[in-house]
Image 1 (tube, rainbow, N blue to C red):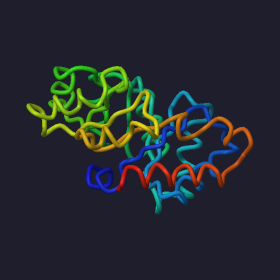
Image 2: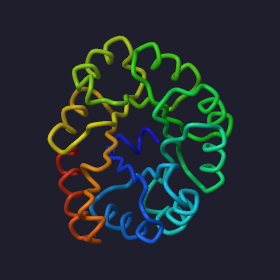
Image 3: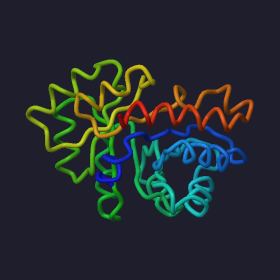
Amino acid sequence: MLEHLNKSPLVPVLRKIRFEDSSFIVKALIEGGVSTVEITMETERASEIIRKTVDEFGSHALVGAGTVLTIEDCSRAIDAGAQFVVAPVLNEQVVTYAVEQGIPVIPGVYSPSEMMRAYDLGATAVKLFPAASVGPGFVKDVQGPLAHIPIMVTGGIDLANARSYIEAGAIAVGAGSALLKKSYIFNKDWTALTKESEKWMKELMN
């Protein structure tokens, strides 16, 4: 998974999307160059969306589950076919469970100590959240002593600042409403979403 993120560092976070829109959203993102998507578990029918997305687009993108807060969330996500799990917090039981199931897990952290603890438990990478409150300088600073720990950033990431986190050493950025704009989803403007995805990918990959 780390190799995959290094090649394609944008992770769209699909939160509370409608089941009926899910295929159109993922297709638009993939057409824009995206090859990883995260579907949050508090989304209505999340397990069904994950399963459907894996079935339809699994050959084009890695499909993961986000906002995995409990072992029950983690189990449901894995049963639905999630290929990785992401959490906003460091729940040691969730990390251990995912590792035991052989599923890449990226727990949320906010300090160097949490980063080290998560990595010691077997986390594939850590998610700095909310990243915007500490900025890319924090990522650069912790890369000194903790360069062996891959960092993904989410929370307050937009097109204007996303690249600065990659340049600071993050392997990936998670993007929510700044990428999946409400107007695109409400108006079912999938072409606009594809173009927005292309902008993000160009910014991150140049």
